[in-house]
Amino acid sequence: MSWYSKFSLSPGDRGIYPFHKGSDMGSLLRFLKKQDYTWCRVLKGYRPVWDKLLGKRVEEINFSIWETHNGIVCVPQHYTGFDDFAQQYLMKAIELNKAVVIVGHPAGISRQKSESKEHFDKFMKLAATAVGEGKLEVMSVTSYINSHIGKEHSTG
Image (cartoon, rainbow, N blue to C red; front, side, top):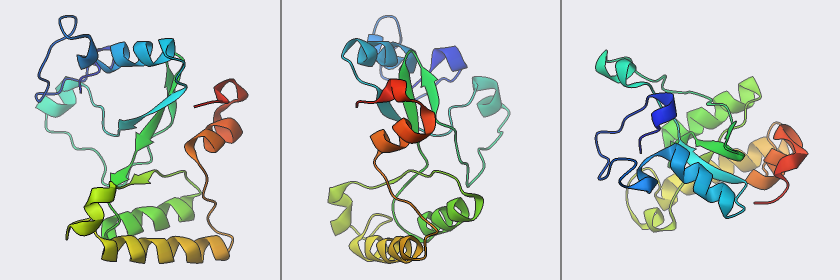
């Protein structure tokens, strides 16, 4: 999705703002605020169009910050899946004491890709070990926002 205020344009957009109000992240955030949402997950890597045209790449492991726009905390989705790369991402987050958001879709468990059951089980064992050693704290998005970003985002 495009985010015009960040000069980020997505070539895959099926509509153009203002004709399709949901085609701009800024417009979507304003709508979510009206519906009393306090946070939403966004893909990492919003880049200005000139960075894309110049071929500048986003770092492989990038701990995008949790930004607030239009009163909505934009939660960065750092990676989708639980494979070796996700495990490296988790270990780097632990090493640097960073928050990381790793996600997967339940339907992915049955596929032999990054969200597979085998990868998920390995990822969870790694996370459980880190929790047991006191190196990792796992919390909900709302809990993280309340404890690290501000009390004004206490629901969501």
